[in-house]
Image 1 (cartoon, rainbow, N blue to C red):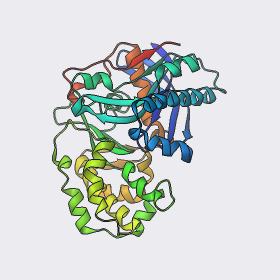
Image 2 (cartoon, one colour):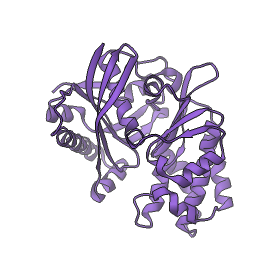
Image 3 (tube, helix red, strand yellow):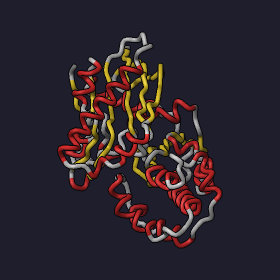
Image 4 (cartoon, one colour):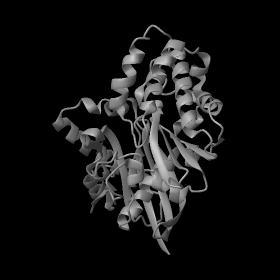
Length: 352
């Protein structure tokens, strides 16, 4: 039996903060068990958050500066995180922060230069997990399903409610499939910020509003929801498909918009996970009681909300695991999920 202590890093599209987790993995081949040792979120201040949300507007040179900047930010977080850790750390696995994701045109980009992280922490660092799959014609997303299968296999499905919602589950043939369902916090947080809030805690603002029937109908008519997997979403899709619809309702109150978004999102998620059995729900949206209620209304599945560590750090844990598979030379991107030409072992290794 092999044993590794791995630091996993995740920064989601909502740009709330950098999730850092140290996990111990024990096992071999594709059979591993994990134990979280320490987990912490380094929240972005308002200036950093604003910078993260505007990355897609930068020039090529400024984007490279941002790549190095976020590499330094990640390295500083790791060095602070491990000050009181006595465990030997084997390596870092960093997802980075997504700026562009357009697999249809053959590219995806996450900032956070792995060479900077490796040199500043003196730890081998695996990064850029998505590009290899995209180069093989895949969506480059979702990547967590192999972790869902191997680490959280006791559940019939795993639902993540982050910037976007995505589902990972076994189909009738017993194969693991996964896809992005809808935007969640990437759009709902934007409306919460109009009221001076970073997010809609518990969904209280949405719960206080009323559904706008015409808006709900237009959102539900978006073509993506009728597409079959593999499929994935990115910020570009939100800008092109959803925001033009919402722009026509600028005179409506924020509570009414959030209510309608929550009902819409809950309906689409409910349809996607209907009759799935036991569904593990993680990500910040798991705390949104109004959204969870809307999901439950639209599906016949057992919704399971786990402990706080699993809710907040499951993706960081799985990226640590993807890094482990990469180090071991095992496939960590599944073509059955991404639509790539073949399974592959993705991630770039930077040496200190």
